[in-house]
Length: 387
Image (cartoon, rainbow, N blue to C red; front, side, top):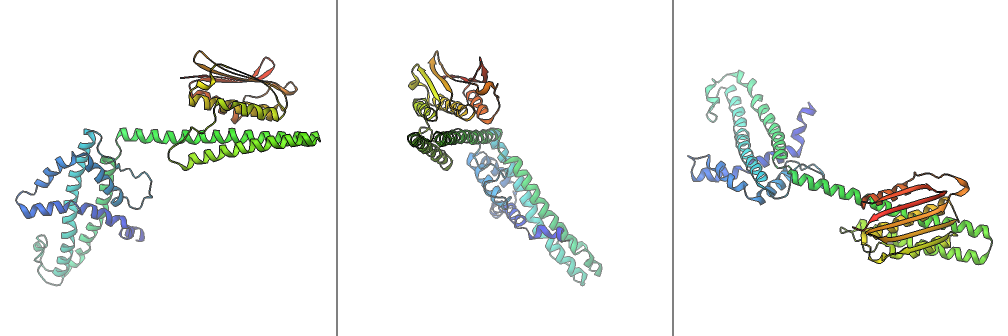
């Protein structure tokens, strides 16, 4: 019983009923003008529905009156954008006609069904009904009392059922068009790509800083040389400061609606990575050829991260070993190569989130990356198109 009466305690039931009553204002005004032609409002809503802004107004009404209990920002299934084409306009016209028809039936039912119930009660007490035309057909008799609940039950079912029907029709006719669905899907994809990019940024930047700090701290403790320890602490301080700058920039991207990328490091800042690796004990032999400073921003930024992750892997897994770094810009391609001897003759592994991130960065730019053993060394080689 409680479940049966639950819709009567739900505010959505009454906001949906009010939504059906609103068109009756237009009908009532017209009936005062010319009651002999009640079909005129149905004709007037046709040009009204062809106005693009009307679709937005109907969508806003549907969102706040047909689904008021749904959370803000949740996909309610109602579009609040103006009509983008003739298909949307004719869907809006069809919705207005359906809303008008359902509103007429709901308004008449909410007036005459309670009146019919009252007339039945009067007939049960021996009074002949005079208000409801249908009740006039009944002879006054006590048995009419048994029929009193029926109009009220019919009213309950009509109000709840019409509310559900109106909501379903609104979602079908006022729902997002294919173009709007595609735009929403693209926006969601952009959000996921941005989230993945930020995760890679944090992994590369913070991972590199922590790796350098661990290597430097271990080397300083093992060396037992105060001068070497001072240099190691200075390198840890510099790397930590750079990591904090990267962290602040990434958090700024999360806070702001526009995604500034001009502050991200590029290959012109590669010297900072090379010096950090040298300060950690790696013997870095770097060779840069070609106009690196002319490389487009997206390619240069991703190239910097690939180089950073490659050097981080060297420090983390190989330690203080000779490292050969080659950066070359030629024939419309940016070529990056980082090679180091495999420690203890191990074959290495091509797995791991860092190496996977290198390959993902290269693939996003339409390039390729190879990671793994090569001629007795561990090699990271990436080819990125400049356009």
